Image: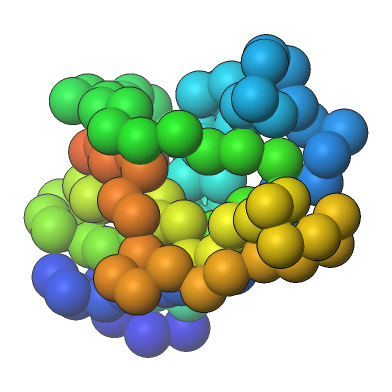
Length: 130
């Protein structure tokens, strides 16, 4: 366990399975991104505080681009404020690769630059130190 420091960051990579498509065009619902934010926040709290923490709130959630089944995602949490028990984090979901059915059923393209799909700010609380 280390001391929580502004700028601490955790990044996960994830493939979006087709079983998560809910809408036309293989779109995935926005709640999928929020669940991923919970995963990176949990790891960040474990790394900084030795505890999974508990989500208290989200603010300024922005859905900026589509997340589709077949996408490869990069999900990040960055610590922006450290309180005595609270940890405020910025979150991002970026699409790093996307299927391209015009080239073939299993074809996919790397996106350069990645597409920023979802952002948010969240607050997690951890037990008191000691």
